[in-house]
Image 1 (cartoon, rainbow, N blue to C red):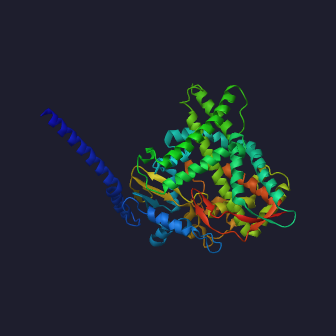
Image 2: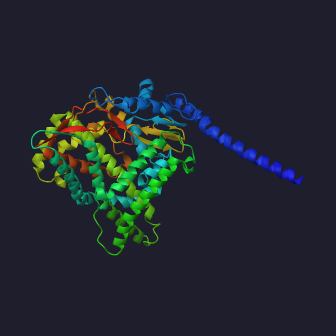
Image 3: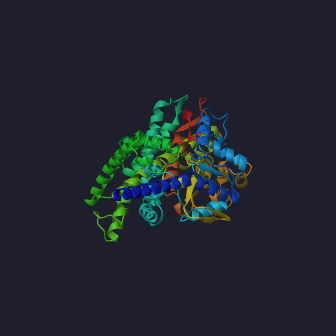
Length: 522
């Protein structure tokens, strides 16, 4: 009898657990999305009806794959339908106030500048997106932190990006650019021209810069790290194409094992670099003027001020946190600038008049001498060109934020569990904000700076805005100015007949088929 009673109890408990689990699953994949759909429609948003589990993701994958099969016809800056065909379809059908289903999670398209400004300002209500933990493993560090932890890391890292520290890193920019220039000069004859795909060169250049400026090494020494990061990025992007299922990342699938293996190798490589430098500083060696040296010095001072020790880093950053920040340096520092540089070369190849204006400004400022910091800051035409390239071809085409608690945005009531999307691409070319020529390459719109060009609206935010404005913005712009100036001093360039205009996004916006240019020595 007792045995029968015990069995009945276990059966009852098992049924309750199974039923509770089923209710949670059904709520996650159906009841909650349908409830959010009703709430969003009440707020004036429109979109496709929610479809079980996948939402708009299947359409996104198939339409994007189809769009990438052929390049664009002609050279147009209106590439939205190619890189984001589903969002373009939603925008065309429903207007600016639409939502996109990323599986069972709705993403709201927010395009009014005043709402964008408010979202950036209310950083505690609109937090960094945590749709899939695998993304945080790929891009860890300060960019994914919130609250006090974010504030602490921002404070510790800030010294590395002060203007005076950037000046000290200029030789790293110069040496990396000089290597690419020398390579081109060996290949391009005194008269005539050579076709060269400059995309791999710009990627190598920015990788070399971040290796030197961040770690005092060069590209060859950091090449293993970059190869591992590229492999890990490819794995992550393939995983993000499917619906995130909680807990699935812990299963020993082939993809998960491959990701963990690359992550372990990355950790070991960065640990070796950081620990060696840390030990050198602790033995009294002079702190090197690179990002890692400044970061470690800032971290140690924080620990000492708080009464800690190098063995007890709870007051500053732990060794793992330093590793994460260095990984972030590598990814953000390399990808952002290489993307900016390659599109700048492409657009100046297309617009020879602006290429010549920029060259004359560089030659008048530096002659054939190596560009110096103060001169780079006074390159008005080059500055205008870079801003216009960032407007038309931003490295990242949108910024996403998560709403964990119901909150207001302007007159809208944003329900918890939704994401908001701040669309850099569409706001940067909104004719109501930029005029009828919004899709044209016109650098002189920035002749009087960003504030005048945007008429005070928050309509130019390539590097974000508000308290979480990208800490590496000046680093990226300075590197781009140095590289562009040194190229313009020695070469003219135009689009090769083999160039195919085909912007595409993986994590960042790149030319799908490379950037073949015809290089001429001056």
